Amino acid sequence: MPEATPEETLLLVDPDLDFLDWATKHLAAKGLRILRCDDAGKAIKVIEKTPVCVVVAAVALQPFDGLDLLGRIRAQSPDTLVILTTGFPTTGQIIEATQKGAHDVLRKESLSFELRPVVESALQTVEDRRSAERPVEEVPSTDGRVKIIGVSRALQDVFKLVGRVARSDAPVLITGESGTGKELVAKAVHEYSPRRQKEMITINCGAIPENLLESELFGHEKGSFTGAISRRAGRFEQADGGTLFLDEIGDMPLSIQVKLLRVLQDGGFSRVGSNEMLKTDVRIVAATHKNLTAEVSAGRFREDLFYRLNVVELRIPPLRERPEDIPLLAEYFLQRITRKNGMARIRISGEAVASLCTHHWPGNVRELENTIARACALASSQILLPADIPLASAPVRTSALAHGLDQVINAAPSNVPLMTWVSSQIVGRMLDRSHGDLKETARALGVQLTDVKRILSPKD
Image 1: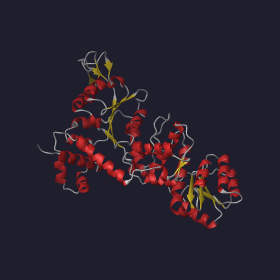
Image 2: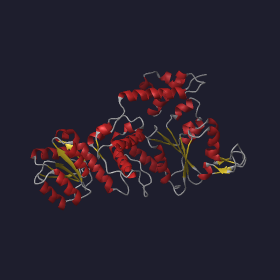
Image 3: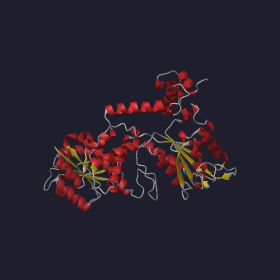
C-alpha cells in the first residue's frame, strides 16, 4: 500500500478479534493510523472523538448492524468512506448499502486479495477530496479547466514535462494512440503558458479537404477561389499571441506542409490569393497518432518539418500501460455522466472495477468513457456490477482486428507495393515503441538489423 499522509486514519469494526489482528497487519502502512473496535456502538464513539477517513465494518454487528452503522456514520461524518464486509451479500444488501452511501461491499472470503486494493482506492479518494481545488490526478489548475485524470507514474511524468515546457515558446509534438487525451494535454500546455490570456485555436488537419485546409490555416482574399465571397482571416491570424493546436498533423498534405514550414521558420505567410506577407506570433502545438518517423521514411511527411515540430515530444501512454488510472477514470466518468443527465447516483462495484482493469482498451480513455456511459444508460440498479458493463469478447476483438486490417489496406497508397507499405508501418510503430532503438526494434520483430534499415530506407 502506498505511503499514507499523516491525516489518514482507518477504523476496523468487527466482532471477530482474529480478523481484527489479521486486518491490522495486512493493511499496515507508513503514515496510516489504524484503530479497531468490536461493536457498532464503540465505533460511533470513536468517530465522535477522532476524524476517520475510512471505516471497514462487518454487516453483522451489535448492538446494531453494519447497514445501520453506515447510515449513522454518513449522517455524522459525510466525508468518511465506509466499506462493508459480509459472508454472503445478497443483491438487495449491496443495493441498499450503495444507496446509503457505502464505498464498497466485500465478501469475507475474498478479503485476503480484495481488502487491501479497495482500502487503498478509498484512501486515494479521500486524498482527492481533500485537494478539491487542485485534485491529485489533475494537472494543477486554478480555474479547473483542465482535467487529466490519472495517478500513474507514466502520466505524472507527462504532467511534469508539461509544467516545464509550458513556460517556453518551443514547439511541442504530442504523440499517442487515438483516444489517449492528446487535446487535453495541448490545452494544459497552453493554459500554463504565458500565452494563456490569448486563445488556443484548434484545427484538425485530417478533417479538412486539402483545397480548403490552406485557406483555413492562412486565410483568403475575396474572389481568390469559388465561394470566397469575402476576405477571411485564417487560424494563424486568429491565434496571434496565443497557441495554434494542429491536431492529426500526420494527415496534413505535403503541399500544406511546405507552407507551414515557412511560417515556423520566419513567422511569415500570405493569405490565399494575396502576395502580401503577414506576420504572426503563434506557439505551435501539434499532435498525431501516427509514427512520424515512419511517415518521413515513407515520404509522406517532410523531414525538415518533423524536426521543426519535434522540439519537445510529449508521449501520452495508452490506457493499457497505466491500469492504475482505470478506477479513477471510471469513477470520474460515472459521476460526470450521471450529473450531466440528471440521473440518480450510481456507484460501481469492486468486481466491476476489476473487470475494467483486465480489459485491453484499444480505444483508450475514449472507449472507457463510452463504456461507462453505456453502462449508465442500461443500468438496472444504482450499482454497476460486472454484468452491467459488457466488454469486448474474443469474437468482437477478432472482428475488430479484421476491420483494422481492412483500414490498413484501404489506407495504403496505390503507387507503393502493399507489403512494402505495411512493413514500413509495422517497423515504424515498433521503432516508436522502442524509442528509436533500431536494435531493440529488430529484436522485438524477430528480424535482422539490416532488414529494419532496409524497410525504413528503401532503395529505388
